[in-house]
Figure 1 (cartoon, rainbow, N blue to C red):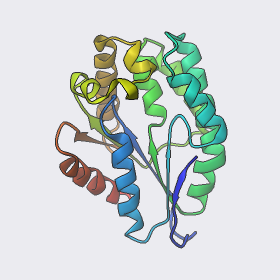
Figure 2: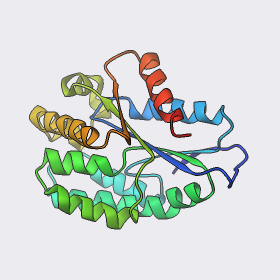
Figure 3: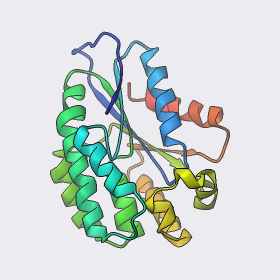
Length: 216
């Protein structure tokens, strides 16, 4: 379920969607929590959530998608991730943005393009069409790509933290995912900010916060 960092909601302020993207082990969860707390300190009301997840349906799909049960057809993955995304937009993101809140979301549509598109080879045009349906055309105001060498990111994950995507996919897959994220960022420089996530968490967070404040 979403974590709500509540202050007084001002419906006169425009809602903003900030997404954190990147390969495994880049620090999206920790940095998302710190970012939400820092934005609340500026006086804004913040909803912190994640993909897949954030809703009852989304969390149930998350358990299915991330458990290590072997390989899944990439089309099935894309459909299930987008089903969770559609419910998140309907139940959490849409109402929060309409109310003038800031939404911080760990992963969004770019992850499906990177993982099932660049990583597994599904046509990007098909994935973009699917995402357009699931999100109703919602595009983040700022996407922060936490860029990290996949070898470093995978080493950061303990065995107990590993999901199907660490356990069932080889290093070359994760390298394609990283390259895909970087290509997406290069194609939309106004929306994306690329942050070097190989540094200490405080240095990374300083860049994440500065990039987020640009759109608030």
